[in-house]
Image (tube, rainbow, N blue to C red):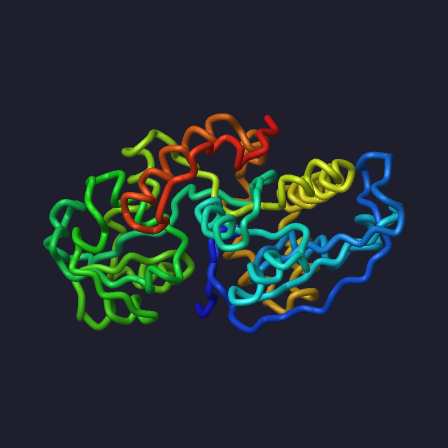
Length: 346
């Protein structure tokens, strides 16, 4: 199945989520207001721009499709939902073309340093409930993570990833992933494993699906295993909505409306995922069956109400996560005040 998923990031994705490079989207010049949100409106005639770097997140596509019809239909302001790509979303946000974007907390220190911004993460769109997995042949002599130490492991280039693999290995072993394995960074990691050129591959669904479905390969270890072992969190928050702290403070009505729209779309997804995927597919051009796979990978139908919020436990997890990301070299320095990066909503 040729779906490239970014876990919001992901998706967001969590999620996540994998980049579909070059997928742009037209601005959505809608009239305003989400059904069931606050009665008070934001600044009259204001225009808010919300961006995502992939078209694979079904609730985003669903809200974009119904923007001005159901969501944000009674507001004095307008909302543009934009689908960009991995090379343009952050620069657009950095120069102020986007007010809100989706990304993972692991990227926040990079964006803050590059553009000298104070950011806050205020709504999760996905969690690493399984995350990337290490796959080996079904008859592999390697049975544990420890047995793979020093062995050839294929992985997508780490510069294109979001730190989950690096943090999980660091948490579980205390060693840098580049030293722990004889790492082969390649866009064809699944093929390397299928062709027997490596002992294992570190892959994220849906790239794992074809290999597992054939019955010739099995999952030996996952990012979730590392996170549980490292700090006891089986559902680490990843992709979500991020904005300048000053923007969140200056536009509370819009932020509340935006969160309410995603909460409503998520509830609808959990009631009837086929309905949401059908609308999202028409909006994004991504087949509904592929969007359904995204929903399964991100655990969207089973996410609890608590997991749809930013909790104090999430802040504590990310305090540890940033430490591991610094040790692994993913970021140069862990933020001094991690709690300031998150708007706790529980």
